[in-house]
Image (cartoon, rainbow, N blue to C red):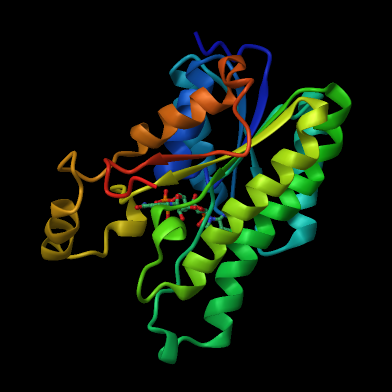
Length: 248
Ligand SMILES: NC(=O)c1ccc[n+]([C@@H]2O[C@H](COP(=O)([O-])OP(=O)(O)OC[C@H]3O[C@@H](n4cnc5c(N)ncnc54)[C@H](OP(=O)(O)O)[C@@H]3O)[C@@H](O)[C@H]2O)c1
């Protein structure tokens, strides 16, 4: 089950956290995974770990806030590996502030990286995916994009936008056998949430029926499914992986 041999995947934000787990799991299922982010040294160490694990991996340095950089990264994947079958738009940033304190730059930076960057990568990957009549686009959204969150108006707008983008793309590309889905994680233990105090985490955990924060591996398992042939009839969906904290 979930055999991804012969597939080429591009995972953004694969230098750590959820993206690293997604890259590792896709490679374990046989995909050749190209890991993308801004920090080359971290990408090299993720690629080395995947290769040590017996998987196939490569890296490309890419900054989502630059459309040229995103387009060049997608082109590099196709040029080096002859195809792009799976695109995982995972990279994301936060610039949390209450609405009245948020600067326009904080709003623009998060929208540009988390939403426009994903749109640009999808647009660049669409042509080769349509041509080969097989594609999987998987966007990492967030539970807060489904339910809102105080202090994150920029991030929530980007994640809700990513869910809408997923549905639009799913409708547009379905006839070419390209699916688009989103995964909406709840709170996951990564560097992004490492700044939260133990008290805040304990408070969050109370609202999670399964009684714990998620792990990057929890999210990666959902991505592997959506990337597989077994998910051929799933498109335009949001797969919530949140321990039950929201049951939309
Ligand atoms: N952790 C959570 O609780 C949680 C919950 C729901 C959703 N999510 C979402 O899951 C995704 C991964 O989160 P995470 O917790 O693993 O985050 P993380 O540990 O902060 O990692 C973020 C990744 O994105 C990359 N990145 C950031 N800005 C970039 C840019 N401009 N261009 C290219 N790459 C960039 C980072 O690498 P470089 O800095 O080297 O570029 C890094 O690899 C994000 O979209 C996040 O919003 C996380």
